Image (cartoon, rainbow, N blue to C red; front, top):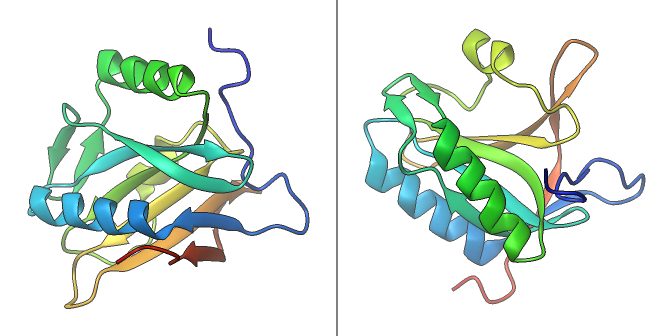
Amino acid sequence: MFPGLLGEPFGFKHTKTCLDGKVAKRLLAEANEAFPVEYSALLAGRHATITAFVPMLHAHSTPDTFRLSGPDFLQGLRRINEQGLQWLGVLHSHPSTPAIPSLADAQGWHYPQLGYWIVSLADDEPQLKLYQWTDGGFAERPYLLDDAGAD
């Protein structure tokens, strides 16, 4: 459908996934605005660096679940493709629970080569974690936050 759209942020042996600081700041702000329901977004960039995102505004969200709308999901992928970027992952929030994948997260994830990001809003300070699906489960992965110009 979109050749070359699917990235592999974990496919670079000596490179950690990197999240642009401005993007991180905007994602956290939008997740807070969606509170108390879950927020979700498609993450985009090149290679192992996330430089953009597409909010999934019409996702079916509750305080403890999210489900992407098919048409919005496809439109989001189209936007990523039109920008000449690769789809590198999905982010969603956990408004009142830790940034740990739930059983529903595991059952609904179908893209093991992409990053699975969770931001928890359960504490005073948001907690952002990155996971990769490997060996039948999620494994937490380190990432770099590029704070250059994030103010």
